[in-house]
Length: 299
Length: 221
Image (spheres, one colour):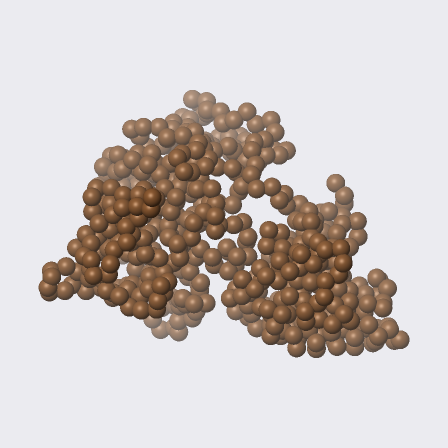
């Protein structure tokens, strides 16, 4: 039975989430599993695992998973005085799951010192360099939660520099390939501390998701067996299974405003999947989870 | 290992490094169609009818592509059915380059006559002569553009660039989509068509015992 929600445009939902990637997918899962009605707007298509391939031309050169600079141009200039020139300065995942679909899946935690660098290093003139308002200990439970929920392979304690953790990784590290073996031996000779990198890729199967088959096509490609712990494979299916989350692909958000009556913000979006039209979606809250490049467009 | 493997592999990798013809980008479905067409044509025992090229043009083009990726003890463009890929390309995503091919083939005939008076077509020349003709043709190729945007323009008008790029793609496209018969392109560059692997992966990790903890002394550094 298909339990996916389909809201009418006139329905007021609790949350309209802009973007379905690393932040949007987790927001969708957390909110929908806690009883909220959620619509996720994603500018890219809803590609599923069987649609992913190893074809470098299609995926990399022809931008199957990412924004196409020929269609969504960006310009860049170093100073206000010079003329901006077209430059592909922003690349991001443009599909349901966002950049988590094509990311390499390295899954690091920040170190304790990263939160208090201002105190340790001191002021940097001309910058607003400050400590974080939170500390590593505040985030640690959430690091652990996400590692266990999405599926991260790694070996706790292998790195002597790792920050404290409340639980080990949920599954053992991925096997080390030939280049990694060479790297490990060479760096160990130099006195460094090589260790298996934490990867958001399953080394053990989970329901509905296969363990990694070591195909080697992580960076830039979608995982056709769901081993990569993308929002697409790990979070969005959980959100959709609640029956309270609707994923709306091929939607570009045009404008956002707060209406007087009813007192709820609204967002206007353009859908290109069903018909080329502008529609208005109302939500009590509109969390923005889009990639930083497109967030700038929104501003 | 055959000594030719390294040289051929390096050559093809260099080809691949510059294979960014962006005019391919908007045409991906038809690129796949062209690849599939080439794949089916190359698999069949009897030659398929060309859709755009005349029989004579196909012979000339195959002679050129077979010098770009020649056949020796290793398979080349001929075995990969590249000419069928080009024919389909001219029918679909690269139809705007038909005049480029027509003019380019005329240029090849001119070069052939200049270098070897009495020989009209490159296909009539010996293998050594064909090599010289194609070398001369490629020497007329515009310097490789530095930016991707310029590549689009030159790839659309420069016959040596166009046929060179088409040959490369016809030889190395993902066999699942078509293009190279019996994975010959991947065999030449050493790409294993397998989809899944398990350790040990090869020479370097065949005796790898797995990650070992650093000694306490090392960790103190």
